Length: 262
Image (tube, rainbow, N blue to C red; front, side, top):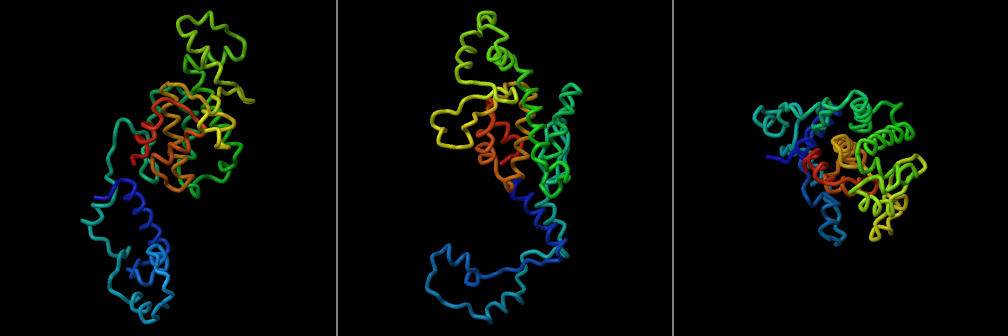
């Protein structure tokens, strides 16, 4: 049985074949220049035209959308199951988090961001404006920072509204964090780039501190789906590497893997 990601990709390929009325045929390696290059075949031999004709008329059909045996369909199509932890399953079969337990205002913020958790061609044209997407993300990040006790108090310290002496046993920890964090122009709490990552230009502005709340966990999962589509159906490790360039949260990789599943 194929992995979940491969099954989802196979379903999309089949839909495309049906839309374009295309049948996929087997092409021998000798006729595939890319395959020849990958095997370092630089002999300069020309392709035999008759071999090309034979490959186009071969009976070795890899996929024909007009013929779909039931047993084969059942083997590659993701099962139609439901779970109490799933609010919606998007067109790629990725589970989006159930935000119903959250208060109305928090749920509406995350639901608005979920409008982007789909393939780019299926997103409304008005939503593709960079400023609109950025404002929705910043709104969710600010909410995550306000809900977490540490990030909320740390923002107050950096704003000069609170002294560390009034915080109690967390004073030492927050004092250390205040030396590696700052507020950007939008009032969002960021951590300075880690020394070993200073060579990456994308980290010069620091990473957004998301805290450790349930809301921030939902936010990471939604962002993981968005990045998955935006950068061409990446797996969990590569999505996590992209997210950690701009965001920081404990156990972020576990959340990404829980969402994408590969």
